[in-house]
Length: 130
Image (cartoon, rainbow, N blue to C red; front, side, top):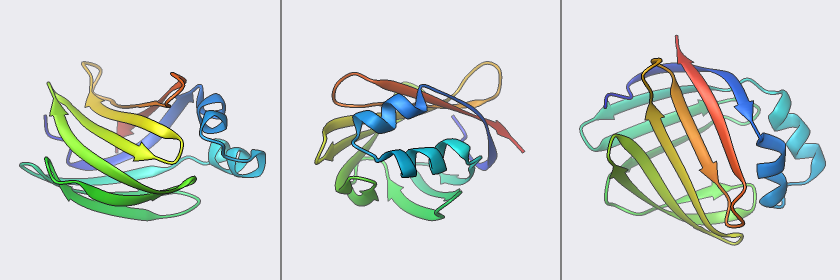
């Protein structure tokens, strides 16, 4: 699946509950909920650069199968990127337990980012290609 492109946020489902499960305080949750982030994704085979532009702009670069360190609201985490069928999957070891994030482009052409907290709380963020 080719993820390359600029993606604008369309909507989120269950975002506040997900952030709460991660221990994010109410002030930060409100900031995140009111934002409409953009994602710039560059893919070259199994190598990626993802730049998320929102309240805090952040960029990560990685290659499938190579662990990397990232910073999330709860602190530093270890991320293992892999393919799960056509999904780009992140298995995340965090201070809040094991987290999973999956990105996939569905039949409607939109990018779905499904995030699962250790307690099972799930959030879906949907992006449309610009």
